Structure formats: C-alpha cells, structure tokens
Length: 224
Image 1 (cartoon, helix red, strand yellow):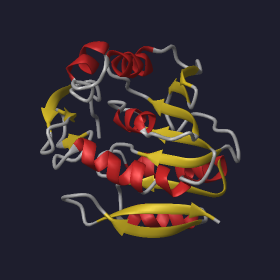
Image 2 (image 1 turned 135 degrees about the vertical axis):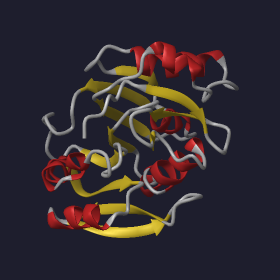
Image 3 (image 1 turned 60 degrees about the vertical axis):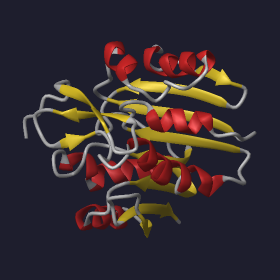
C-alpha cells in the first residue's frame, strides 16, 4: 500500500486529547475514544507498572509518533530511573507538535521537556531530570540494529497491521525478542490473530488483557 505518512491532520479524541490522522487511509495515531486514556491503559498501566518494583527500567518504544507515551512515562511520580529509547521513521514537524494539546495545562518546565523530546538531535542522549534519560532515533524498525538483552520493556506502537503488515512480521518481532532481557515484556494495542501467532512463533508467551474504551483486549508478550 502506497501511503504518504506525512499527509496528516490534527484531530481531537473523545477524552479531549489530541491525535493525528493519516489522510490517505482511515488510520489514527491513537484511538478515537481517547488518545491519553489509551496510552495510559496500555503502555503505563500494562507496561511500565509491570516493573513498578524495579529501580531502573530500560524502555524501547517502536513508534514515537506524537510523543504521548514518552510524556506520560516522564510524568510518572517515582524514584525509578528510566532509560527511554524511541524509534520513529516519520517524525512530526514542530508546527504539528505545538498544535497538540497534551501540555496545555502543564507548567513551563514540563512544556520545555516535551518540546525538547521532539526537537532533540537524533541519537543524542538527553537528561530530562535525575530519573529520566531520553534518546530518539530517526530510523525504520525493520532496518535498525538493536542491542541484545538490553531492554526490560518495549512499547510496540506502530501503525496497524492492516496498513503496514511488515512492521508486525516475525522478522521484526525476532529482533525485538532478542533485544529484551529475560522476562522482559512487550505491550501493544494490537490483538489480531496474525500478530499473536507471529509473537508466539519467535518465542513470546502471550497474555490477553482487557483493552481501553472501545477495544476489547490488548496484548502483553513476555520473554521467558
């Protein structure tokens, strides 16, 4: 499918938070039922909080998008040290970033950090605070080399397999599997049968968890 991923428009989801829509296809960056609620439910509650007793967590995010997952992770009130690495093939322009309303009620310091995540140089590690280190890579998950046994947690938040099935292939999941530490987890909004079979084929043990509003279930995959 030939899609222009830079052809997109701002939308507002049902919980009042912003998202973007690809104009070439019926595909949103987040659930229309609520961008913020979806990200909290899947990536924070089913992902980060899984490791709530761990002093230091290494996270890989596949699909930085609007930066909402990174922002919500940064906002967690904890002494836990987070090393956050994200991969994005089609970064937003700063004009698009300033239209998003995630930081509308935040203090100036929080706004500065959110903008810094979008504006930072690729591959440069920046220290957001004493507990949060951030690195962004402008690359394609299918092509990028990942270190082995590096991450505790993967936020897999790519465009859906309906429009880009090769991002959800066994070859991609094998790469991600190898990059996780033993007992590391991957969390994703997708619960399609083909995706689950691909995850199982590379060695993941799967858990089907209740989804956010508008979605029956989500997937958590564990490297045993």
